[in-house]
Length: 255
Image 1: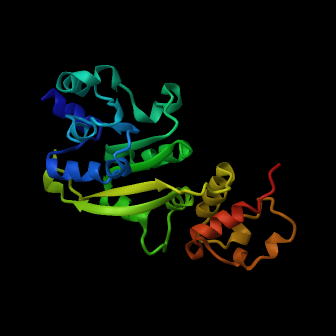
Image 2: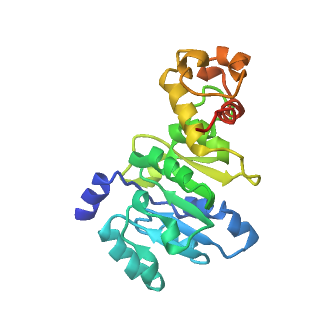
């Protein structure tokens, strides 16, 4: 009873289908290459994904101490690799994780925060496979590249995204009201020559005044000489692609 209350308070839902869990893990790159690699699993709960990750250099982050105890008993060989920590406060560099995979059935209450965490450590995360609310998954992958959100633009600037499959709410406990999506986020092979803080500022400023044309919303941004004459400034955010935003960010004068 205490465990269920704890799960609800943390916004956790737990996958009960082993076939789906195996399908999620098998979509990871290292499973195909058989290459031993560092993996961070977030919020494993009872370890339904963990059981299929034992062939990796695995580090587990679990915020709920009740599940830390359960996992320690279930996977005794991982005793010193199960940390009772909030992923959003965790710096992977402190444990020398500089090239790793992130995986998890992420709590839906922190979906956006997880994505910003991926951006924060974008230089070190080679791949992420995660469970998100279906609406979030579709918005991030955005196959048609239309009506992009600011977060989608930031993610797609540094990563490729792929919608893997939809998961029905009947295979979770407690049962959520919405369907879920498993998506894959893969670091681009050719590292983009982008200043993240500038790109983030451009995206945030433009989206804060999304009804206005860029010549108005970005009027206080200092750009290279004559760049404001570019026709792109007559557009609004919904008319812009990821490439448009990265192009604009490269024209900003860094003080």
